[in-house]
Image 1 (spheres, rainbow, N blue to C red):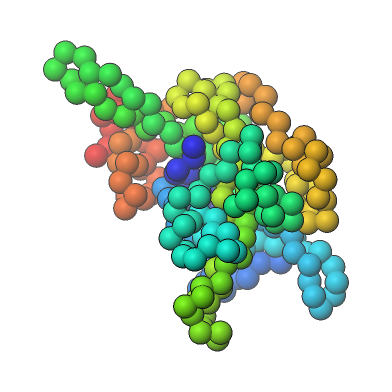
Image 2 (image 1 turned 135 degrees about the vertical axis):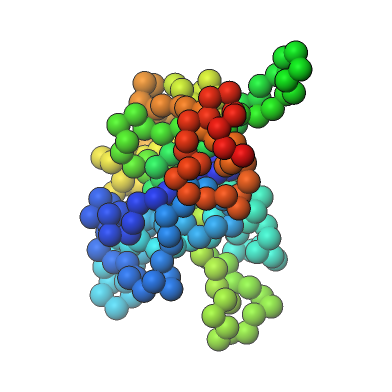
Length: 250
């Protein structure tokens, strides 16, 4: 699974990179850089929606809450258990299949974290060592995602929090450096396939699945980082400090 990741690029950098034509510069709606993105956090997403005024499909940069909540769910709390969707079943599972057909997005990331169990040796206790896994070339990861809209049945019609936009990350079998740490990893979409993946009119299941091929080996780097990342309250560049043997940070 993918339960924590890093996303530090500003919207001013993401917009031209992804060909975004619309995003809200209002700081109250902004998502700040994070070195410890956790479930239920607001995250930047790239998606395409139909503009009802112009009838045109517009590529947008907008914040979503990480943890998909299906439209039929009774509580927002469901999202905390739906942060990942397995690529093997995403097109068929009731919670994801409608979003897979019409509401796909990209979730920009610098990289993601996984933990490897280190067995006890001598007087040292067993522990879990965090690793930061990222593209070797330092480029952004465009993680494949789905998004959904959910209305709080307990909220008044005019309440500001009546509607929630939520998302999930599609995961696949881990390869390359990631596979040595954990069996699953986020599935990244290649730049040449961004437009096809985002297009809400593109609904052929077979063609969409073809975009979700496992990434080529040899493109990811994994390095041990500070155990400070274990605490979701910790944030900042220091989380990426070298953590050989898990002893850097606290």
